[in-house]
Amino acid sequence: MRLPKAVAAFDGLEPTNTVVAIAVVLVLVGLWLTIAALKPAKFTHTATSGNKSVWISRTALEGSVRDAAGHTRGVSSVGEVSARKSKITVSINTTADTQTVAKAVEAEVVERLRGLSDVKVVVRTRKDSA
Image (tube, rainbow, N blue to C red; front, side, top):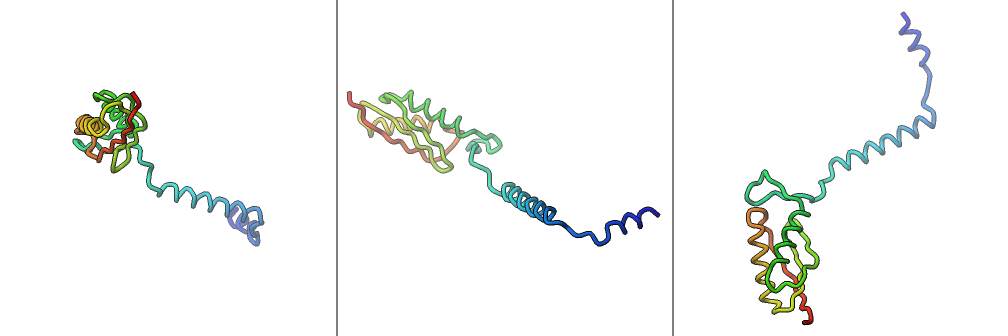
């Protein structure tokens, strides 16, 4: 018997401007959260080429490339290394012939990444003054 009295107490009430403003803000927050949930994730890891259930981070891939390039004969220093979805770019400095060293670095990096990634490797060279 108390329920009809409670319902009757709310009869005729209308929303205030504050309630409408709060409702609009909550709708906008909900919309923003929905869009954020549906947006594709940032590229942070990539599946290895050997076993698709094993993933490697971009940072680890770049570190492996940096190490392989740095241990190649003729490389005096390794500059920027960038791993993307479709290619890996490595910048090196050398005092030797740039084309020969670039081919050697590319071969070394491809060998190091065998089983991890089969993306294109781009080597940028800069000749150091001896």
